[in-house]
Picture 1 (tube, rainbow, N blue to C red):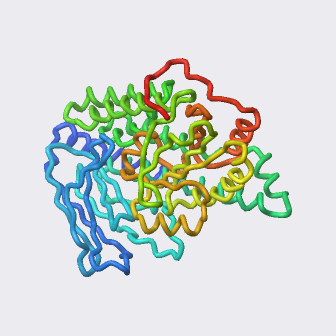
Picture 2 (spheres, helix red, strand yellow):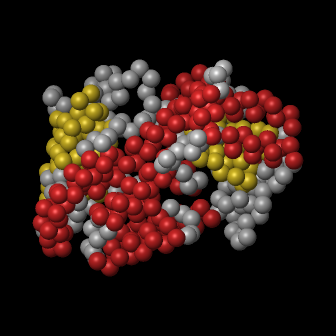
Length: 409
């Protein structure tokens, strides 16, 4: 089925590309209409809102318009612009649809999550628009399918480990997959970027492709970005994106193994403000999480086991939530009964930028000197093993080759 999707897009490319190319080169699309419908609204709300944001690639989208849903749950916007760009419709702060603004677009969105247990699993929304807009459609689908497969594989492994019969877990652990999850994702990404290599909409994917690590992938993404900047001088977002990538790379260097854990202070569960300074002299696991994150909450019992086993040996944990709903945060804390300190980020975007993560749980293991030992994306066996080994052997972080001045604990 996945092959059929791409096969159907190829003939469209042959027919639509010349028209789209002419429009982009002449930069003639000065205004477009955005229309859509939301299937489900929040039953507890009397004012279901929809926002229109523009991605300026600086790290925080700009809200350019908003409206209430009509009685039949429809919405419409008019965009006036001096050049095309990336926009997103945000329905109820729950469902999202992103598009390229070189032609009128329309979409049907699911809207509010009607599940009894709400988990932030992205719902795919197809946006009916231009040929270039299909790059965003396909890129979004690729990312969301990859995320859902990751959740499925994590859950399968989690429950297979709990089963009395170990046959299934043994098969999962020891059987080589024909195409591992990450390979599938990058294969589709490579195909899409090659198909749209000369199109301005490619800017949508280059931020994620570049990452923050020097190497062949980073160099390739930056070369493609420089090509867009030269080819489309009006695409100011490409220039901003380049600076954002360079800034994020510099910040990521400050979070390498051996660097001091940044000194931060956040509101705590008792109504005060607390930082990380008091943990110096202990091994510390800093866990970035949120109440709505299923994998975060699945990891909590394992973290509890580590905490109970090693707290007498100088191990501690602090959880930093990126929840924007304080009541949801407090409810989750009560349900999970975590015996360590709980902090709440007072600026989610700033926290994610400072600690360079886009997904949670993200965890940092810090040594007794307050230096970063390891960063983990997701909680798995390697996280447990690293913590156990570090505490048992009394190891310290390996100093980074290049020292970067920074205020730590």
